[in-house]
Image (cartoon, rainbow, N blue to C red; front, side, top):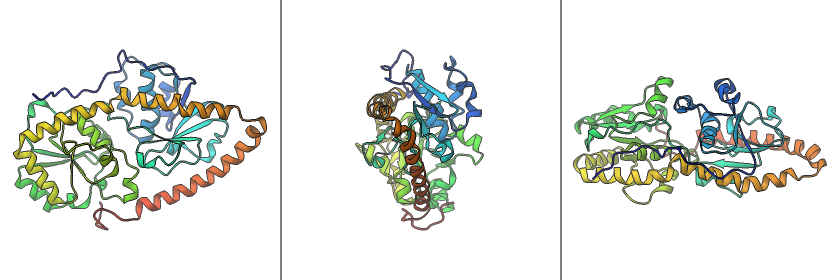
Length: 366
């Protein structure tokens, strides 16, 4: 019997072991989060706060702070880096002008270049673990997610793309693809172009029947993307049809996890299978519900805590014990050298994001 309760585990009553040192999350948009920066306590109702996490920096600073704070950890959200403390920076907040050489900087890479202005890094794709200073943490699932309406049963009427239209591979934006969907009595529902409405749509799977996510990004770009669309589909109770991305493939344990496709023909065949085989649809939903439990906020918070209390805390202690000459002279010099490398790596990153082999070749992507 299908269990259609797809709600994520609540933080109520769940607390983690204390951290050895406080951790400060440096906010990329202080004006947006001044209510949390000015207070060391969360409001009783945090759901509205998640609705404000619309940018990548919000996710890696404010959202992470909220979810770890909920679970009893000594974390703070700050406007500027705090000297002599562990400070977590989203990539886009890292810059030479911060002059953060007197803070122990941990950078969240997300889908950017490998950060250089830092001591250690948080990454969300296992391919980006290059050495002992890189620590893999799964991406948080979409907060405030509204799962598929259980009364829809096993119907396959709405194929949904939750994302920015330019990221959808070109063959799936053609009239020919739409016509083939209509022949199966399937609607293709894309997120709205308006940014505010778009973010709201990414949380709403109530009328979704199947999720499609096939990107024509460069191979390098796909190697730094997280598996978020797959995990969200599991939580939402929707079978997923996905392109051959490394993050998805790293999670795949069986054919029930998702259907991998490379062509329009593959997608049409997958939809036909799901539409004519309710048992397969049900099995994929039930499997997804089980797999989703590996990525609840509680589970991911445990991973964060393990890194913060483990290798990051250990190296922070080493950093604290550095000699006075090192603190006064070597740190600023190292900071400048790292900043130059950071800038060069960022330039190289965007060159590889824009140029390189793609699944669909040089087809237009927008």
